[in-house]
Each structure stands twice: as structure tokens, then as C-alpha cells.
Image 1 (cartoon, rainbow, N blue to C red):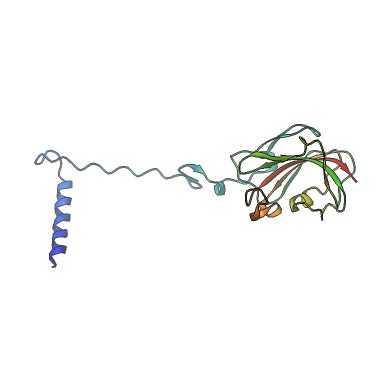
Image 2: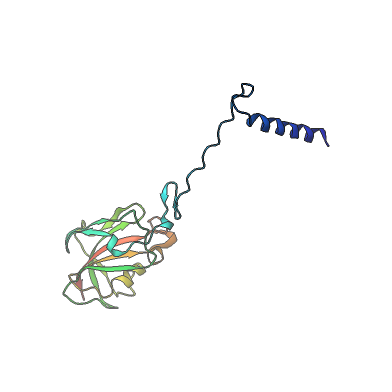
Length: 191
């Protein structure tokens, strides 16, 4: 046997023997007990809590919107669910005027909240001037608006939760890359 290996084996044997003696034998103190294993986090969580991937996707019912048509809304996005991966459309008030179809022009007021930081990024209510969507379905707006505004009636308020692939995607366009967008949109006029 090589001398180095023999020394290591002797050292392991001595350390093992010393650690197994109790306090009454020769005055040695016992080795410290091993710490109990850390409790495992339940499936789908980490020690810090559920991760975004572990949370169920939010639905329109999870997003709270306060305010009526014509007034600047307040939007609350919960921390208990993940952003939806598909376009979510919910009429908050139905409206009673003309219905928007492909090719319509819709004068809108809107408020945009970004999902990741839950902050209002933009809104037309404060500017006091509606934003026009011309040639709905083919308008020069994000796909989430072209798809999500079809069917709204004049005088209606709609919640749109737009995933990144129908918003600004990885490029961001001045918004954080791959951001989920939450819009509350009023259809002021439909022609």
C-alpha cells in the first residue's frame, strides 16, 4: 500500500473512532449532532415562495378595475397568479352604440399598466384627447388591439390582457422586453 494512502486510511479511522466516543469515555466531547435536513418546499414552490411558472395563469376576473366609462380607471394586478399567455378580453361595460368590426374606426381612451411592475405606463385620459384606431384589424397598432377591440360597442369599456407575442415582444419598443400589457379601453366613438 502506498504511504500516502495508508496515512489517509489511518486518519479516517482515527477521526471516525474519535467522533463515535461519548463524553463519558476518556473525557472527549461527542461530535456535534448532524443538523436536521432542511424541510423541503412543497412541490411547485421554492424556499422564497411560488415562482411565476408555478402560479396559475390569471383570468380577467383576477384583475380588478375601478371606475366607470369615461373616467380614468384604476387597475390592480394580483401577485397570486401568473400573466396569461393568451389574449384575454372582457367587457367591463357593454356599451349600446355601434359595434366595432374589421375596418371600423374607433376613437378610444385607454390606460396601460405593465404587468411586471404594476405601474401605469401611459393613458389618454390625462391628455383629454381620444386615440384613434383606423382600419381596425389592420390598424397601425399592436396585434392585441387589432384582435381585442373587434366587437366592442360604442360606449363600452373593455379589459385587454395582452401577452408579449401580441404586444411589443422581445424588442420592447420602449417597454421592458416580453412585457404583458393590461389595457382598459373605452370606445368613445365607432364609425
